Structure formats: C-alpha cells, structure tokens
Image (cartoon, rainbow, N blue to C red; front, side):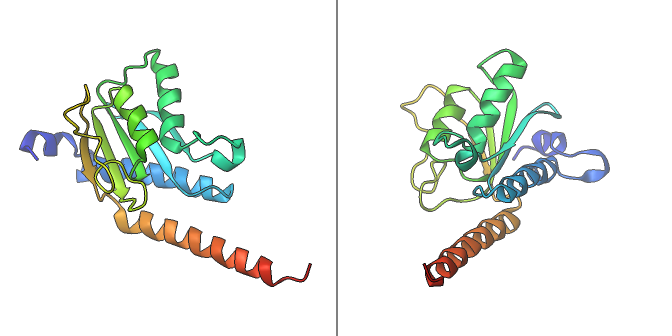
Length: 174
C-alpha cells in the first residue's frame, strides 16, 4: 500500500479508518442478529462520511435480495441521487456473494473492505473473484481481514446457537 494511502486512512489520534468503519458494520451485524438475521453488516463511506449502513434483512422482509450490501447500495444511491457510487468505500463483515459483488460492480464502488472470507459463496476471492475480472468493465480494490476474528466469531456463534435451537426443537415432544 502506498504511503499516501496509508496516511489518508489514518484518523485523528492514529486510529485506523478501516477498523473504525468496520466496527460500525459490526454494529449493524449485531442489530441484524437481534432480529434473527444472519449477522452481516455493511457501511458505505464517501470521504469520511457514512452515506448508508444496514444489516441483513432477508428473514424480516422475506426478500432473497435483502443482503446488507444491496440495502446499503440502494440507500446510498438514493441519498447521493446517483447510481454511480464513485469515490466510496464499502465495508462488509463477510465477503460478498456473487449477487452482492454484481451490485458493487454495477454501482462502480471503487473499494471494498471485508472482514471474513466466505468459503461457501464468497465472490471477492474465495470461490470466485469478480473484483478484478478483466472481462468486466469495472474493477474493485479489495482489502480483507479487517476485524476478521471478531466477525468470524460472531458468525460462528450465531450458527452454533441456530443449530442448538433446531436440535432442542427436535427433542421437544409434539
């Protein structure tokens, strides 16, 4: 990473901006978990201003496209009055899937920061890498691993609790 980019990513007091914004995405993920959603959060930033933030809402809205990333892209486009989300950074607690990477590419988001890889459906390097596919008309700079352990543990705990609840439900007499 160039020294100028490193310097521009520092906030007052030396706090790393990527860590700061990923913590905001984690807050959105926690709120999603409280609703029974898979705890994934996203935050879109332009300059140092949060433009939009959200957590997953697939279960709440019964909408297969209600991933945190797409909700944030829609809200940001509305607020900025443009579908081109140039000069922004998207922070997500889990590597985006193919659908979400499609949205990121179509919105022309130049930078993606995610915490944990998704070995099942990740499309920014795990299963596929749509971020830098020469056949597409846009590329996305990707930074991964910011707050990885915290995000991974949150997801693991959520699915552990879900499996336990299903196991307990099966053991209950009808």
